[in-house]
Length: 194
Image (cartoon, rainbow, N blue to C red):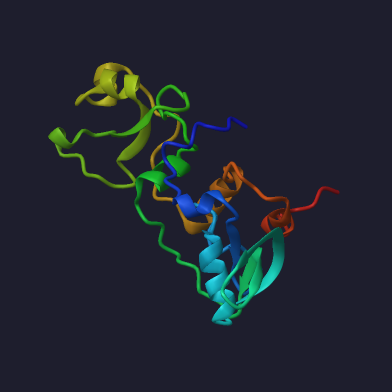
């Protein structure tokens, strides 16, 4: 998998660069796949101290407070179930994820922006059904014209994704840093080969 083509879309807090904790719901599934539910090590330790999570796996690294030493959690599970959202937020990241980080006109990866299929100047609205991921050159080529006017075609029609579809897309585009302790919890419900 191409490692760097998503870095422009995922703005990770600096705290997630070192020892992030995978957060699982009480059913042992990630809270979110898009982006993957991660907490900073500070948030994970705070949740442990507040008795909101159970630690399933830990890093070798430790941190010290004035009175105690803690191994940094790498996987935590919530003690109370959080009902997953059914509505998929219309965000730039989710749009790119729906379109698999590819231009919907030429299929290229990287240097993506978004394009209104029916331009706003012609009455098009900003919605799941009218906006697609597009590379800069295709977006510039299309401009404020219709697809028919410029002879372009979409790889697939833009549709509002369901939460299940976004989870499936998210599983295909995991973050660049998957810790080995997370693997058993990320793919435990994947269909096994016969």
